[in-house]
Image (cartoon, rainbow, N blue to C red; front, side):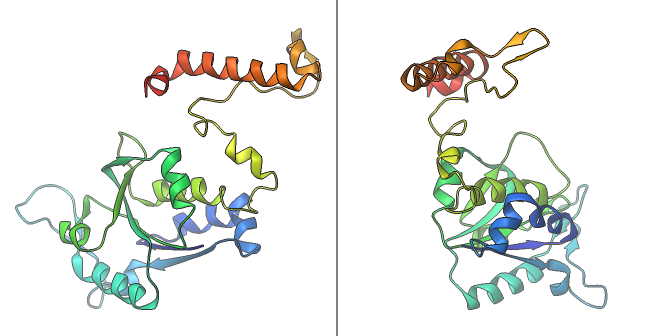
Length: 225
């Protein structure tokens, strides 16, 4: 998989994308991630990328010209399965979306900034608009990182135990069951006996029951759906 990211502030992306599982996936050739600095395509001596909104109002808006230029340049080099824009008015990102995107070959992310982007960019290029929740952040870099992390961890070879990713919360329509590890007793708190029984069928049933219970208590909307 190849992921291209357009950002006005690349340093926000560089460190997280060079750590942990994503770094391993990049080093092993599982995913190629390329960050493009939008300011390299800015206008004039000062590489301007934003301007006042027509009609007045607070905030600045990313201009059409720099973004049109860079996206057209990238499209001339390869075909993108999706061009994604992280925005509060997008579709709420779910595990199913991560699963779907992990099957793609080329993805392009556009990170917004300031008040937003010129609507003509969305009309011309964007194929999928995503929100990670009902709140506003300074820019699209952090939401983009969240989506990329959710995608890359699903790519074969990123996680050594591939079954682990497929048993995460939301993959089965439930939250995960409680988890325990050694020691079996700590400060009077004991690991449930069934998890130490060695009876895998009973353990599987217990985990399913606990996952259902936790989902009912914390996210009943998931069971309704």
